[in-house]
Amino acid sequence: MLNAILNVIWLVLEGLWMAIAYVTVGIVCFILIITIPFGIASWRIAGYVLWPFGRTIERRPGAGLASVIGNVVWVVLFGWWLAVGHLIAGVLLCLTIIGIPLGLASFKIVPITLVPLGVRVVPSSALRY
Image (cartoon, rainbow, N blue to C red; front, side, top):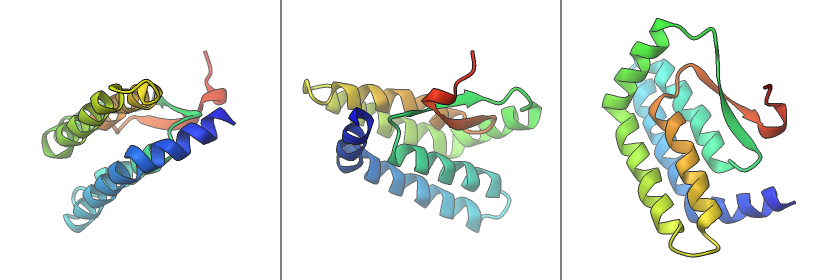
């Protein structure tokens, strides 16, 4: 129940706006054709950004050199400014007591924003240790 409440507050304060940014980046990537894998990753992150509480990211062990090279290209083209958006929003949300969990969630999204290839979004309960 708490996850649902936090997700609704998140959606209004940051989720919708950052999801629009990710969808826009995805559209640009699809238009450029060669960057279609980045568009797919961007839309996957957009879904995560809309409803982050109760979900987390997990590295895919089979991701190889292509995902590393793709992540470098992603950071140069799109990832850095999306990460800055999360950092600024996270700092602003942490200025209020009620916004601290939301700010921490914003900081939690920065790693997938910087390296979206070779990771997947999973429910928090599905983590394997």
